[in-house]
Image 1 (cartoon, chains in turn orange, cyan):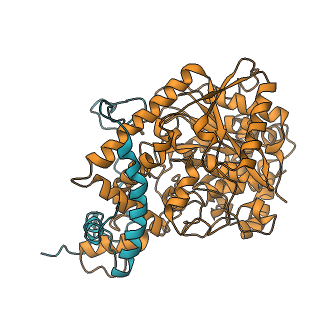
Image 2: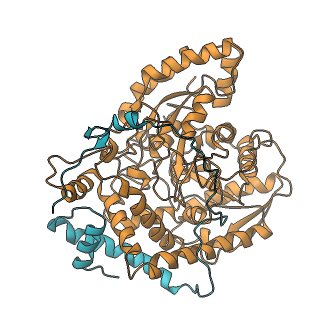
Length: 485
Length: 95
Protein backbone atom coordinates (compact mmCIF):
# COMPACT_ATOMS: atom_id res chain seq x y z
CA UNK A 1 0.00 0.00 0.00
CA UNK A 2 2.72 2.46 0.94
CA UNK A 3 4.24 2.22 -2.53
CA UNK A 4 1.06 3.28 -4.27
CA UNK A 5 0.54 6.71 -5.75
CA UNK A 6 -2.33 9.05 -4.89
CA UNK A 7 -3.99 8.07 -8.18
CA UNK A 8 -3.72 4.35 -7.36
CA UNK A 9 -4.93 4.76 -3.77
CA UNK A 10 -7.84 6.85 -5.01
CA UNK A 11 -8.87 4.03 -7.35
CA UNK A 12 -8.52 1.41 -4.57
CA UNK A 13 -10.72 3.50 -2.26
CA UNK A 14 -13.24 4.09 -5.03
CA UNK A 15 -13.50 0.39 -5.87
CA UNK A 16 -13.98 -0.48 -2.20
CA UNK A 17 -10.79 -2.54 -2.13
CA UNK A 18 -9.88 -0.79 1.15
CA UNK A 19 -11.56 1.67 3.47
CA UNK A 20 -10.03 5.02 4.33
CA UNK A 21 -9.90 4.06 8.02
CA UNK A 22 -7.98 0.86 7.25
CA UNK A 23 -5.66 2.68 4.84
CA UNK A 24 -5.01 5.46 7.36
CA UNK A 25 -4.27 2.91 10.11
CA UNK A 26 -1.72 1.20 7.87
CA UNK A 27 0.02 4.46 6.98
CA UNK A 28 0.02 5.71 10.60
CA UNK A 29 1.49 2.43 11.87
CA UNK A 30 4.32 2.56 9.36
CA UNK A 31 4.88 6.28 9.87
CA UNK A 32 5.28 6.03 13.62
CA UNK A 33 7.85 3.26 13.24
CA UNK A 34 9.90 4.58 10.31
CA UNK A 35 10.00 8.24 11.29
CA UNK A 36 12.12 7.58 14.36
CA UNK A 37 15.28 7.51 12.31
CA UNK A 38 14.06 9.92 9.62
CA UNK A 39 12.59 12.75 11.76
CA UNK A 40 10.57 13.99 8.79
CA UNK A 41 7.48 14.83 10.88
CA UNK A 42 7.20 17.43 13.64
CA UNK A 43 3.62 16.52 14.59
CA UNK A 44 1.68 13.34 13.79
CA UNK A 45 -2.08 13.87 14.11
CA UNK A 46 -3.20 10.30 14.71
CA UNK A 47 -6.62 10.93 16.29
CA UNK A 48 -7.64 13.63 13.84
CA UNK A 49 -6.49 11.52 10.89
CA UNK A 50 -8.62 8.57 11.97
CA UNK A 51 -11.61 10.87 12.52
CA UNK A 52 -11.09 12.38 9.06
CA UNK A 53 -10.74 8.91 7.55
CA UNK A 54 -14.00 7.85 9.15
CA UNK A 55 -15.71 10.97 7.75
CA UNK A 56 -14.20 10.20 4.34
CA UNK A 57 -15.67 6.68 4.34
CA UNK A 58 -19.08 8.20 5.16
CA UNK A 59 -18.76 10.74 2.36
CA UNK A 60 -17.98 7.91 -0.05
CA UNK A 61 -20.95 5.89 1.16
CA UNK A 62 -23.14 8.95 0.54
CA UNK A 63 -21.85 9.19 -3.03
CA UNK A 64 -19.98 12.45 -2.39
CA UNK A 65 -16.36 11.33 -2.88
CA UNK A 66 -13.74 13.36 -4.78
CA UNK A 67 -10.43 11.94 -6.14
CA UNK A 68 -8.83 12.93 -2.83
CA UNK A 69 -11.46 11.58 -0.43
CA UNK A 70 -9.75 9.35 2.11
CA UNK A 71 -6.25 9.67 0.64
CA UNK A 72 -3.47 10.17 3.24
CA UNK A 73 -0.97 13.04 2.85
CA UNK A 74 0.95 15.58 4.96
CA UNK A 75 1.32 19.36 5.21
CA UNK A 76 4.64 21.17 5.51
CA UNK A 77 4.59 22.77 8.96
CA UNK A 78 4.34 26.23 7.39
CA UNK A 79 0.63 25.91 6.56
CA UNK A 80 -1.67 26.94 9.40
CA UNK A 81 -3.88 24.06 10.51
CA UNK A 82 -6.71 25.04 12.85
CA UNK A 83 -6.21 23.47 16.27
CA UNK A 84 -3.01 21.69 15.27
CA UNK A 85 0.47 22.98 16.18
CA UNK A 86 2.08 24.96 13.35
CA UNK A 87 5.70 25.62 14.27
CA UNK A 88 7.41 26.69 11.04
CA UNK A 89 10.38 24.66 12.37
CA UNK A 90 11.05 27.34 14.99
CA UNK A 91 11.21 27.73 18.77
CA UNK A 92 9.38 31.01 18.21
CA UNK A 93 6.23 29.10 17.20
CA UNK A 94 6.83 25.80 19.01
CA UNK A 95 3.70 26.44 21.09
CA UNK A 96 1.65 28.10 18.34
CA UNK A 97 -1.73 26.53 17.65
CA UNK A 98 -3.45 28.53 14.91
CA UNK A 99 -7.14 29.40 15.34
CA UNK A 100 -7.66 29.14 11.60
CA UNK A 101 -6.82 27.10 8.49
CA UNK A 102 -4.65 28.25 5.62
CA UNK A 103 -6.57 28.28 2.33
CA UNK A 104 -4.39 25.36 1.16
CA UNK A 105 -5.33 23.47 4.34
CA UNK A 106 -9.02 24.25 3.82
CA UNK A 107 -8.87 23.12 0.19
CA UNK A 108 -7.51 19.68 1.07
CA UNK A 109 -10.00 19.38 3.93
CA UNK A 110 -12.90 20.14 1.59
CA UNK A 111 -11.53 17.59 -0.90
CA UNK A 112 -11.75 14.96 1.86
CA UNK A 113 -8.03 14.18 2.06
CA UNK A 114 -6.64 12.77 5.32
CA UNK A 115 -3.75 14.74 6.82
CA UNK A 116 -1.39 12.52 8.85
CA UNK A 117 0.66 15.37 10.28
CA UNK A 118 3.05 18.30 9.76
CA UNK A 119 6.42 17.85 8.16
CA UNK A 120 9.81 19.17 9.24
CA UNK A 121 11.47 22.16 7.59
CA UNK A 122 14.28 24.67 7.84
CA UNK A 123 13.32 27.34 10.37
CA UNK A 124 10.97 29.88 8.76
CA UNK A 125 11.78 28.26 5.41
CA UNK A 126 15.29 29.71 5.45
CA UNK A 127 17.68 27.01 4.36
CA UNK A 128 18.57 24.29 1.88
CA UNK A 129 19.14 21.32 4.17
CA UNK A 130 16.48 21.20 6.93
CA UNK A 131 19.41 21.36 9.38
CA UNK A 132 18.21 24.63 10.92
CA UNK A 133 14.94 23.19 12.25
CA UNK A 134 14.40 23.68 15.99
CA UNK A 135 13.14 20.09 15.98
CA UNK A 136 16.37 18.59 14.67
CA UNK A 137 17.53 17.64 11.20
CA UNK A 138 15.68 15.28 8.89
CA UNK A 139 17.69 12.43 7.38
CA UNK A 140 17.75 11.73 3.66
CA UNK A 141 16.39 8.16 3.27
CA UNK A 142 18.85 7.54 0.41
CA UNK A 143 21.70 8.41 2.75
CA UNK A 144 20.30 6.15 5.48
CA UNK A 145 20.23 3.21 3.11
CA UNK A 146 24.00 3.71 2.69
CA UNK A 147 24.53 4.15 6.43
CA UNK A 148 25.21 7.86 5.96
CA UNK A 149 23.70 11.00 7.48
CA UNK A 150 22.93 13.04 4.40
CA UNK A 151 20.62 16.01 4.09
CA UNK A 152 17.25 15.75 2.34
CA UNK A 153 17.64 19.32 1.11
CA UNK A 154 15.48 22.21 2.27
CA UNK A 155 13.54 24.00 3.30
CA UNK A 156 10.86 21.37 2.48
CA UNK A 157 13.16 18.51 3.53
CA UNK A 158 10.57 16.83 5.74
CA UNK A 159 8.01 16.65 2.93
CA UNK A 160 10.60 15.34 0.46
CA UNK A 161 12.00 12.69 2.83
CA UNK A 162 8.51 11.55 3.89
CA UNK A 163 7.44 11.09 0.27
CA UNK A 164 10.71 9.36 -0.70
CA UNK A 165 10.45 6.99 2.26
CA UNK A 166 6.85 6.23 1.29
CA UNK A 167 5.50 7.49 4.65
CA UNK A 168 2.92 9.47 2.63
CA UNK A 169 2.26 9.46 -1.12
CA UNK A 170 2.14 13.27 -1.21
CA UNK A 171 2.97 16.32 0.90
CA UNK A 172 2.48 20.05 0.49
CA UNK A 173 5.60 22.22 0.38
CA UNK A 174 6.74 25.79 -0.32
CA UNK A 175 9.42 27.31 -2.53
CA UNK A 176 10.98 30.76 -2.12
CA UNK A 177 14.45 30.15 -3.62
CA UNK A 178 14.25 26.46 -4.52
CA UNK A 179 12.74 24.91 -1.41
CA UNK A 180 10.49 22.46 -3.27
CA UNK A 181 12.71 21.65 -6.23
CA UNK A 182 16.04 21.18 -4.45
CA UNK A 183 14.79 18.74 -1.78
CA UNK A 184 12.75 16.92 -4.46
CA UNK A 185 15.98 16.49 -6.45
CA UNK A 186 18.03 15.35 -3.45
CA UNK A 187 15.38 12.82 -2.39
CA UNK A 188 14.49 11.49 -5.83
CA UNK A 189 10.88 12.72 -5.86
CA UNK A 190 8.83 15.00 -8.13
CA UNK A 191 8.00 18.55 -7.03
CA UNK A 192 6.50 21.65 -8.61
CA UNK A 193 6.63 25.35 -7.76
CA UNK A 194 3.70 27.07 -9.51
CA UNK A 195 3.62 30.56 -11.00
CA UNK A 196 3.66 33.29 -8.33
CA UNK A 197 0.05 33.98 -7.41
CA UNK A 198 -1.31 30.61 -8.60
CA UNK A 199 -1.63 29.14 -5.08
CA UNK A 200 -3.00 31.20 -2.18
CA UNK A 201 -0.53 32.32 0.49
CA UNK A 202 -3.29 32.97 3.05
CA UNK A 203 -2.29 31.10 6.21
CA UNK A 204 1.10 30.14 4.76
CA UNK A 205 3.57 31.65 7.21
CA UNK A 206 5.37 34.39 5.30
CA UNK A 207 9.13 34.49 4.67
CA UNK A 208 9.57 36.66 1.55
CA UNK A 209 6.20 37.80 0.28
CA UNK A 210 7.17 38.51 -3.33
CA UNK A 211 8.89 35.13 -3.71
CA UNK A 212 7.00 32.58 -1.53
CA UNK A 213 4.82 30.09 -3.33
CA UNK A 214 3.05 26.96 -2.07
CA UNK A 215 3.42 23.88 -4.26
CA UNK A 216 3.34 20.15 -4.63
CA UNK A 217 5.53 17.15 -3.79
CA UNK A 218 4.81 13.50 -4.65
CA UNK A 219 6.51 10.63 -6.50
CA UNK A 220 4.78 11.10 -9.84
CA UNK A 221 3.88 14.01 -12.13
CA UNK A 222 0.29 12.72 -12.17
CA UNK A 223 0.07 13.02 -8.38
CA UNK A 224 1.52 16.53 -8.56
CA UNK A 225 -1.25 17.37 -11.04
CA UNK A 226 -3.87 15.96 -8.66
CA UNK A 227 -2.41 18.09 -5.86
CA UNK A 228 -2.31 21.24 -7.94
CA UNK A 229 -5.98 20.76 -8.89
CA UNK A 230 -6.75 21.16 -5.17
CA UNK A 231 -4.23 23.90 -4.34
CA UNK A 232 -4.51 26.30 -7.27
CA UNK A 233 -7.10 29.03 -7.56
CA UNK A 234 -7.99 32.64 -6.86
CA UNK A 235 -8.35 33.52 -3.19
CA UNK A 236 -9.77 36.91 -2.18
CA UNK A 237 -8.00 36.55 1.19
CA UNK A 238 -4.57 36.73 -0.53
CA UNK A 239 -3.99 40.14 -2.06
CA UNK A 240 -1.37 38.69 -4.42
CA UNK A 241 -3.58 35.85 -5.64
CA UNK A 242 -4.13 35.89 -9.41
CA UNK A 243 -7.70 35.58 -10.69
CA UNK A 244 -7.34 33.08 -13.47
CA UNK A 245 -9.17 29.83 -14.28
CA UNK A 246 -7.67 26.60 -13.00
CA UNK A 247 -7.52 23.93 -15.73
CA UNK A 248 -7.77 20.22 -14.87
CA UNK A 249 -4.02 19.55 -14.73
CA UNK A 250 -4.58 15.82 -15.21
CA UNK A 251 -6.48 16.28 -18.50
CA UNK A 252 -3.41 17.15 -20.59
CA UNK A 253 -0.82 14.79 -19.07
CA UNK A 254 -0.91 12.53 -22.13
CA UNK A 255 -0.44 15.13 -24.87
CA UNK A 256 2.40 13.98 -27.14
CA UNK A 257 5.62 15.97 -26.89
CA UNK A 258 6.38 16.13 -30.64
CA UNK A 259 7.51 19.60 -31.51
CA UNK A 260 8.24 20.63 -27.91
CA UNK A 261 11.11 23.15 -28.10
CA UNK A 262 13.52 22.79 -25.20
CA UNK A 263 16.13 25.42 -24.34
CA UNK A 264 19.24 24.64 -22.31
CA UNK A 265 20.58 27.79 -20.61
CA UNK A 266 24.32 27.60 -21.08
CA UNK A 267 24.87 29.31 -17.72
CA UNK A 268 23.22 26.33 -15.98
CA UNK A 269 25.61 23.80 -17.49
CA UNK A 270 28.70 25.44 -16.07
CA UNK A 271 30.22 26.52 -12.78
CA UNK A 272 30.37 24.02 -9.94
CA UNK A 273 28.19 21.47 -11.75
CA UNK A 274 29.91 18.08 -11.49
CA UNK A 275 30.70 16.20 -14.70
CA UNK A 276 28.78 13.13 -13.51
CA UNK A 277 25.66 15.23 -12.75
CA UNK A 278 25.86 16.91 -16.15
CA UNK A 279 26.14 13.58 -17.94
CA UNK A 280 23.11 12.18 -16.09
CA UNK A 281 20.99 15.27 -16.82
CA UNK A 282 21.98 15.38 -20.51
CA UNK A 283 21.01 11.69 -20.69
CA UNK A 284 17.56 12.61 -19.39
CA UNK A 285 17.27 15.37 -21.99
CA UNK A 286 18.10 12.84 -24.76
CA UNK A 287 14.97 10.92 -23.67
CA UNK A 288 13.00 14.05 -24.50
CA UNK A 289 14.52 14.15 -27.98
CA UNK A 290 13.39 10.53 -28.45
CA UNK A 291 9.89 11.69 -27.51
CA UNK A 292 9.98 14.22 -30.33
CA UNK A 293 11.30 17.35 -28.68
CA UNK A 294 14.01 19.56 -30.15
CA UNK A 295 16.82 20.98 -28.06
CA UNK A 296 18.87 24.14 -28.48
CA UNK A 297 21.22 26.19 -26.36
CA UNK A 298 19.94 29.52 -25.02
CA UNK A 299 21.39 32.14 -22.71
CA UNK A 300 20.25 33.85 -19.51
CA UNK A 301 22.87 36.61 -19.49
CA UNK A 302 22.10 37.86 -15.97
CA UNK A 303 21.95 34.40 -14.38
CA UNK A 304 25.11 35.01 -12.34
CA UNK A 305 23.46 37.92 -10.51
CA UNK A 306 20.49 35.89 -9.26
CA UNK A 307 21.95 34.72 -5.96
CA UNK A 308 23.16 38.22 -5.08
CA UNK A 309 19.77 39.77 -5.91
CA UNK A 310 17.94 37.10 -3.93
CA UNK A 311 20.12 37.53 -0.83
CA UNK A 312 19.13 41.18 -0.69
CA UNK A 313 15.44 40.84 -1.52
CA UNK A 314 14.59 37.73 0.51
CA UNK A 315 16.28 38.82 3.77
CA UNK A 316 14.84 42.35 3.36
CA UNK A 317 11.32 40.98 3.00
CA UNK A 318 11.96 38.48 5.80
CA UNK A 319 13.03 41.27 8.16
CA UNK A 320 9.65 42.91 7.58
CA UNK A 321 7.60 39.70 7.82
CA UNK A 322 9.32 38.40 10.93
CA UNK A 323 8.90 41.68 12.81
CA UNK A 324 5.49 40.38 13.91
CA UNK A 325 7.19 37.85 16.21
CA UNK A 326 7.61 39.99 19.30
CA UNK A 327 6.21 37.89 22.15
CA UNK A 328 3.11 40.07 22.55
CA UNK A 329 0.20 38.18 21.03
CA UNK A 330 1.23 34.56 20.35
CA UNK A 331 4.26 32.32 20.20
CA UNK A 332 7.33 32.42 22.38
CA UNK A 333 7.85 35.11 25.02
CA UNK A 334 11.08 35.32 27.03
CA UNK A 335 10.90 34.79 30.78
CA UNK A 336 10.58 37.75 33.17
CA UNK A 337 10.98 40.58 30.68
CA UNK A 338 11.91 43.71 32.62
CA UNK A 339 10.36 46.13 30.15
CA UNK A 340 8.85 46.19 26.67
CA UNK A 341 12.16 46.59 24.85
CA UNK A 342 13.67 43.74 26.85
CA UNK A 343 10.67 41.58 25.92
CA UNK A 344 11.14 42.30 22.21
CA UNK A 345 14.92 41.96 22.06
CA UNK A 346 15.23 38.86 24.23
CA UNK A 347 12.16 37.09 22.80
CA UNK A 348 13.62 37.50 19.35
CA UNK A 349 17.18 36.64 20.38
CA UNK A 350 16.03 33.46 22.13
CA UNK A 351 13.15 32.46 19.85
CA UNK A 352 14.95 32.70 16.51
CA UNK A 353 17.81 30.43 15.38
CA UNK A 354 21.16 31.63 14.02
CA UNK A 355 20.38 31.63 10.28
CA UNK A 356 17.06 33.42 10.78
CA UNK A 357 18.75 36.12 12.86
CA UNK A 358 21.50 36.48 10.26
CA UNK A 359 18.97 37.05 7.50
CA UNK A 360 16.87 39.49 9.52
CA UNK A 361 20.00 41.52 10.29
CA UNK A 362 21.18 41.53 6.66
CA UNK A 363 17.70 42.47 5.52
CA UNK A 364 17.39 45.27 8.07
CA UNK A 365 20.77 46.60 6.95
CA UNK A 366 19.78 46.51 3.27
CA UNK A 367 16.60 48.47 3.98
CA UNK A 368 18.11 50.99 6.38
CA UNK A 369 18.59 54.66 5.55
CA UNK A 370 21.57 55.20 3.31
CA UNK A 371 21.61 51.64 2.01
CA UNK A 372 18.10 51.19 0.55
CA UNK A 373 19.00 52.50 -2.93
CA UNK A 374 22.31 50.68 -3.21
CA UNK A 375 20.92 47.34 -2.08
CA UNK A 376 17.15 46.79 -2.18
CA UNK A 377 16.29 49.07 -5.08
CA UNK A 378 19.32 47.88 -7.05
CA UNK A 379 18.35 44.26 -6.46
CA UNK A 380 14.78 44.91 -7.66
CA UNK A 381 16.19 46.41 -10.86
CA UNK A 382 18.45 43.42 -11.42
CA UNK A 383 15.34 41.31 -10.80
CA UNK A 384 13.67 42.88 -13.81
CA UNK A 385 16.75 42.12 -15.94
CA UNK A 386 16.58 38.48 -14.81
CA UNK A 387 12.86 38.34 -15.64
CA UNK A 388 13.54 39.82 -19.06
CA UNK A 389 16.10 37.07 -19.78
CA UNK A 390 13.37 34.44 -19.27
CA UNK A 391 10.79 36.37 -21.32
CA UNK A 392 13.32 36.53 -24.16
CA UNK A 393 14.16 32.83 -23.89
CA UNK A 394 10.48 31.86 -24.06
CA UNK A 395 10.18 33.65 -27.40
CA UNK A 396 12.42 30.92 -28.88
CA UNK A 397 11.56 27.83 -26.83
CA UNK A 398 8.63 26.34 -24.91
CA UNK A 399 10.47 25.14 -21.81
CA UNK A 400 13.96 25.36 -20.33
CA UNK A 401 15.77 22.44 -18.76
CA UNK A 402 18.75 22.20 -16.47
CA UNK A 403 20.08 20.22 -13.54
CA UNK A 404 18.11 21.15 -10.40
CA UNK A 405 21.21 21.22 -8.18
CA UNK A 406 24.99 21.37 -8.78
CA UNK A 407 25.57 18.18 -6.80
CA UNK A 408 23.62 15.41 -5.04
CA UNK A 409 22.73 15.22 -1.33
CA UNK A 410 25.64 16.34 0.85
CA UNK A 411 26.62 15.08 4.31
CA UNK A 412 25.03 16.78 7.34
CA UNK A 413 27.22 19.57 8.68
CA UNK A 414 29.22 19.90 5.47
CA UNK A 415 27.90 23.34 4.52
CA UNK A 416 27.00 24.94 7.83
CA UNK A 417 30.24 26.76 8.66
CA UNK A 418 29.88 29.51 6.02
CA UNK A 419 26.30 30.53 5.14
CA UNK A 420 27.32 31.50 1.60
CA UNK A 421 28.39 27.90 0.80
CA UNK A 422 24.82 26.81 1.56
CA UNK A 423 23.36 29.66 -0.53
CA UNK A 424 25.22 28.43 -3.64
CA UNK A 425 23.14 25.19 -3.53
CA UNK A 426 20.30 27.20 -5.08
CA UNK A 427 22.29 28.50 -8.06
CA UNK A 428 19.97 26.88 -10.65
CA UNK A 429 16.67 27.37 -8.84
CA UNK A 430 16.76 30.90 -7.47
CA UNK A 431 16.29 32.99 -10.65
CA UNK A 432 12.97 31.22 -11.21
CA UNK A 433 11.56 32.65 -7.97
CA UNK A 434 12.82 36.13 -8.82
CA UNK A 435 10.97 35.99 -12.14
CA UNK A 436 7.87 34.33 -10.63
CA UNK A 437 7.67 31.62 -13.31
CA UNK A 438 6.80 27.96 -12.61
CA UNK A 439 9.31 25.10 -12.49
CA UNK A 440 9.53 21.42 -11.54
CA UNK A 441 12.17 18.94 -10.49
CA UNK A 442 11.82 15.42 -11.84
CA UNK A 443 13.95 12.38 -10.85
CA UNK A 444 16.50 11.83 -13.63
CA UNK A 445 18.86 9.17 -12.40
CA UNK A 446 21.61 8.64 -9.86
CA UNK A 447 25.19 9.76 -9.32
CA UNK A 448 27.26 7.67 -6.90
CA UNK A 449 24.00 6.07 -5.75
CA UNK A 450 22.32 9.38 -4.88
CA UNK A 451 19.33 10.89 -6.73
CA UNK A 452 19.71 13.57 -9.40
CA UNK A 453 16.97 15.98 -10.44
CA UNK A 454 16.11 17.45 -13.84
CA UNK A 455 14.63 20.94 -13.61
CA UNK A 456 11.92 21.88 -16.11
CA UNK A 457 11.13 25.61 -16.27
CA UNK A 458 8.10 27.13 -17.97
CA UNK A 459 6.53 30.43 -18.90
CA UNK A 460 3.94 32.09 -16.63
CA UNK A 461 0.94 29.81 -15.96
CA UNK A 462 2.35 26.91 -18.00
CA UNK A 463 2.00 24.35 -15.18
CA UNK A 464 -0.09 22.05 -17.38
CA UNK A 465 2.69 21.89 -19.96
CA UNK A 466 5.35 21.22 -17.31
CA UNK A 467 3.29 18.40 -15.79
CA UNK A 468 2.66 16.95 -19.27
CA UNK A 469 6.39 17.01 -20.05
CA UNK A 470 7.23 15.40 -16.70
CA UNK A 471 4.51 12.75 -17.07
CA UNK A 472 5.65 11.72 -20.55
CA UNK A 473 9.22 11.39 -19.27
CA UNK A 474 7.95 9.19 -16.45
CA UNK A 475 6.24 6.88 -18.98
CA UNK A 476 9.62 6.01 -20.52
CA UNK A 477 11.86 6.08 -17.43
CA UNK A 478 11.49 4.60 -13.96
CA UNK A 479 13.76 6.83 -11.86
CA UNK A 480 10.70 8.14 -10.01
CA UNK A 481 9.75 4.62 -8.92
CA UNK A 482 13.06 3.74 -7.29
CA UNK A 483 12.80 3.22 -3.56
CA UNK A 484 15.54 3.73 -0.94
CA UNK A 485 16.11 0.46 0.99
CA UNK B 1 32.38 44.43 1.99
CA UNK B 2 33.06 44.69 5.69
CA UNK B 3 30.31 45.48 8.12
CA UNK B 4 31.54 47.25 11.23
CA UNK B 5 30.81 46.39 14.84
CA UNK B 6 28.93 49.68 15.10
CA UNK B 7 26.77 48.84 12.07
CA UNK B 8 25.87 45.47 13.60
CA UNK B 9 24.92 47.06 16.91
CA UNK B 10 22.78 49.68 15.13
CA UNK B 11 21.05 47.10 12.96
CA UNK B 12 20.40 44.85 15.97
CA UNK B 13 18.59 47.75 17.65
CA UNK B 14 16.50 48.39 14.51
CA UNK B 15 15.65 44.68 14.28
CA UNK B 16 14.88 44.49 18.01
CA UNK B 17 17.16 41.49 18.44
CA UNK B 18 19.53 41.38 21.38
CA UNK B 19 23.06 40.63 20.24
CA UNK B 20 25.62 39.79 22.91
CA UNK B 21 29.32 40.74 22.79
CA UNK B 22 30.44 37.18 22.01
CA UNK B 23 28.11 36.98 19.02
CA UNK B 24 29.31 40.16 17.33
CA UNK B 25 32.54 38.79 15.79
CA UNK B 26 30.78 35.76 14.29
CA UNK B 27 28.20 38.16 12.86
CA UNK B 28 30.91 40.46 11.49
CA UNK B 29 32.35 37.50 9.57
CA UNK B 30 29.06 35.95 8.39
CA UNK B 31 27.33 39.20 7.44
CA UNK B 32 30.56 40.34 5.78
CA UNK B 33 30.57 37.21 3.60
CA UNK B 34 26.93 37.72 2.65
CA UNK B 35 27.53 41.38 1.78
CA UNK B 36 30.55 40.35 -0.34
CA UNK B 37 28.19 38.10 -2.29
CA UNK B 38 25.69 40.93 -2.60
CA UNK B 39 28.29 43.45 -3.85
CA UNK B 40 28.26 41.58 -7.19
CA UNK B 41 25.11 43.59 -7.93
CA UNK B 42 27.05 46.83 -8.31
CA UNK B 43 28.58 45.46 -11.53
CA UNK B 44 25.17 45.36 -13.24
CA UNK B 45 24.11 48.22 -15.52
CA UNK B 46 20.62 49.16 -14.33
CA UNK B 47 20.46 52.80 -15.42
CA UNK B 48 17.27 52.65 -17.43
CA UNK B 49 15.65 49.73 -15.59
CA UNK B 50 12.52 50.03 -13.45
CA UNK B 51 12.58 48.07 -10.18
CA UNK B 52 10.38 44.95 -10.20
CA UNK B 53 8.31 44.31 -7.10
CA UNK B 54 5.81 41.93 -8.68
CA UNK B 55 6.38 39.56 -11.65
CA UNK B 56 3.12 40.54 -13.32
CA UNK B 57 3.30 44.19 -12.15
CA UNK B 58 0.02 43.56 -10.37
CA UNK B 59 -1.44 46.26 -8.15
CA UNK B 60 -3.39 46.07 -4.92
CA UNK B 61 -6.95 44.80 -5.51
CA UNK B 62 -9.77 46.85 -4.05
CA UNK B 63 -13.08 45.61 -2.67
CA UNK B 64 -16.36 47.26 -1.63
CA UNK B 65 -16.29 48.97 1.78
CA UNK B 66 -18.52 46.37 3.46
CA UNK B 67 -18.02 44.51 6.73
CA UNK B 68 -17.35 40.86 5.93
CA UNK B 69 -15.33 39.61 8.91
CA UNK B 70 -16.65 38.61 12.34
CA UNK B 71 -14.99 39.54 15.64
CA UNK B 72 -13.05 36.49 16.84
CA UNK B 73 -11.03 38.17 19.56
CA UNK B 74 -11.67 35.43 22.12
CA UNK B 75 -10.37 32.64 19.94
CA UNK B 76 -7.35 34.69 18.84
CA UNK B 77 -6.50 35.68 22.42
CA UNK B 78 -6.83 32.12 23.71
CA UNK B 79 -3.23 31.51 22.61
CA UNK B 80 -1.79 34.79 23.92
CA UNK B 81 0.90 34.81 26.67
CA UNK B 82 -1.10 37.26 28.81
CA UNK B 83 -4.39 39.07 28.40
CA UNK B 84 -6.84 41.10 30.50
CA UNK B 85 -10.23 42.52 29.57
CA UNK B 86 -9.64 41.78 25.92
CA UNK B 87 -6.28 43.57 25.93
CA UNK B 88 -2.84 42.01 25.45
CA UNK B 89 -0.62 42.46 28.51
CA UNK B 90 3.02 43.41 28.04
CA UNK B 91 5.64 44.77 30.45
CA UNK B 92 5.62 48.47 31.11
CA UNK B 93 7.45 50.73 28.69
CA UNK B 94 10.25 52.49 30.53
CA UNK B 95 9.77 56.25 30.86
